[in-house]
Length: 443
Image 1 (cartoon, rainbow, N blue to C red):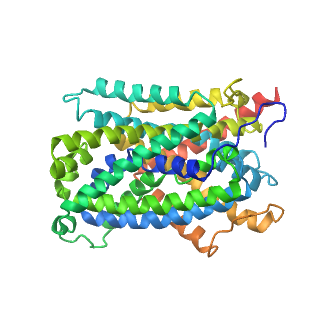
Image 2 (cartoon, rainbow, N blue to C red):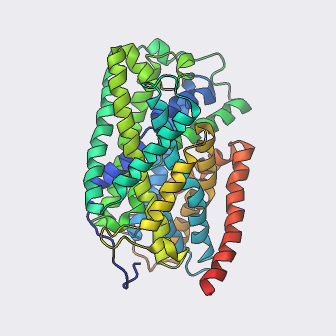
Image 3 (cartoon, rainbow, N blue to C red):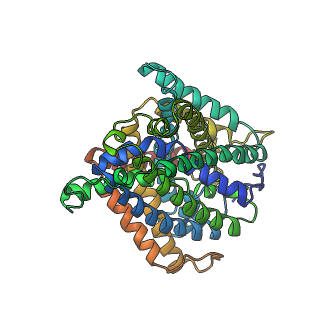
């Protein structure tokens, strides 16, 4: 894929770094800020059903990513898969451009959610934080991540493992503390008509699945930097599947232990549920310690996510499928400078928005042009591109792809109308931007 006239990326990430990158992104601040939201979506412990179904979707979609990444192990992830899959069709340039366009809108929102969570947990120490102080802390976290990433990929790989280690310590401490104090009566205190299977139940389930899939996002992060992965056809599928299984186990145990210590009616009102939880099991000092670990974990997630996100517009621009300025590499560090600065800067700006608006907006903008389009790409490749070798083939094909498709469409269809409109609007705006880009590139 690379233009031979430009310096190329360095393949230095192995299975350990790839798995660490995925898991650091997946288990960031997400579960520590969304537990109250997911409980509120269904009004009780039955929200765990959203986690269960979310795990199934993540595993199935992980197999989609694995097959595509093993077949096309270059930088850019979804962009590359859509470009190669549909290159021989009349929409060969439009489809990958639309993905990059919507990613400019959704990628920074995902990163920003980590900065918002960082600021939210900082308020545990800084009592009485106002709106502007919160925004300043979130923006400061974004600047720190940008500074850490402004270096070559070998150093970034080492930093990823260090930050991942902090994440593992955080979740293991919480799980161990929760098991010791677990009360099944609290964990399974279902309200009346918890499983009434009404319209409200299914809409709430869609909301719970949306939050669960937000927390799972990142199982594919290594695909975004595949051009910097050693032996990618072997490493990437393993990193994806290990990450999904490990994080599913972590989430299930951690969430169940939290509502087994803090009553769910109280938990759904908490701004920093993990700190509240640790106060119950170990006192104020334990809550302070785990809050520090969560701040570490949130930075690790934002670090991993910004790293991967910055490579997507870069890869597209390098191939001539997006604005050419995004293809610029740092002359010494050999990392994409313009793409990193744009994605990082937009994420800092998006951190000024409220969390409950950021999450559904980023999911609504991404589902159609990324996850659904990728599933279509798998079918298209198998039917029309036998020339592309596939070192990894999804198990039980096409069942995982069908389950992932149904799950994503259900989440999109049960979102609030305003967010569905936002997702459609970014798509329509992308069509206009595509026309402008074609005119600029032809000059």
